[in-house]
Amino acid sequence: MSHTSLELIELGAVFLGLGLLGRLAGRIGMSPIPLYLIGGVCFGTGGFVPLGNIGNFTTLAGEVGVVLLLLLLGLEYSAAELTTGLRRSWPAGVLDIVLNAAPGVAVALALGWGPVGAAVLGGVTSISSSGIVAKVLADLGRLGNRETPVILSVLVFEDLAMAVYLPILTALLIGVSFLGGLEAVAISLAVVAVVLVVALRYGRFVSAVVDSPDREVFLLKVLGTALLVAGIASALQVSAAVGAFLLGIAISGSTAENAARLLEPLRDLFAAVFFVVFGLNTDPRTIPPVLGWAVVLAVATTVTKFATGWLAAQWQGIRMLGRARAGAALIAHGEFSIVIAGLAVSYAAVPSELAALATAYVLLMAVFGPIAARVVEPAMRWARSKVPAPAPGA
Image (tube, rainbow, N blue to C red):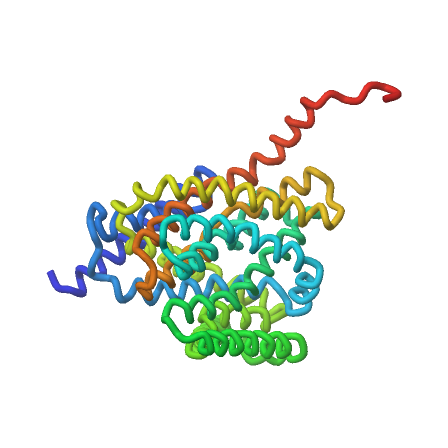
């Protein structure tokens, strides 16, 4: 059998398997991300049937998946909404990062992975999954709830924090000097500031450049611009994903809506490949030794994420049930945690066990997060029904 034939067979099997896993996830009402990761682990290094002939394609497709994930997230916000949300939510955002990075930092230091490992694992535990959270809110019909803008503001703060965090992390991973790290952060902040100014003042021109009445031309222009911007951002040590996110913010109005609708199937396809690639690169034999630590992190960050959402909603005057819904919605972790761990492993600057720990942790949180969001409201109502009503005149 020729090499090309074998590649096509393996690639077809991967896509078919992803489709079946996605259908199974839909049937049982959960995010497909854990199943994609498990599928990758089963057929990767040390798995049942290792797939070794499609590595080049899947690696590049995974990178495209990250770009599309962040691009479509950016398309959901205008620059004005972003800046307004940040002004209102920055205290909650800072609390979110500090509270949820702490468990990851503590575990990494306890395992002897040093400052770089602590920086990586702190990032893994601090960032919620915008994709899973948005899907859960839509599935549960909560997009119009009072607490939803609070949730989205915290998620946006996390995404912008990544614009600063990723260049710092990249500098640490490649071992550049302190001044080199400061230069990377300065470049990142300058690019973010320029893009936000362009988006606020000239967003309509950016939208006009990529817009087209022809679907094929529109798709090629948007996708080509996203990959071009992502590549330039990566060359400037900003992060390809953050570059795509900022481009999405610059595109606004009906152009953004049409782009999101057109790119959504491509995003789902390439993002699924990204999760599978991460699983393919994780040896399942390395997971059992770190499973206990993954459970510790899952329990700790469930508490801290719930506290973040509760306090953020309370500061906006939202009642108890809305606070609980906000806290539960932020629990899920997914694509961004895997992006951070995958970046670290690709530079070989951290132990291979970190990838296994991140995979086990994301599996736990990606499964438990949607479940918590679904059950928190009936659980709160049940708890309130058990509290005795005050006596008349009391």
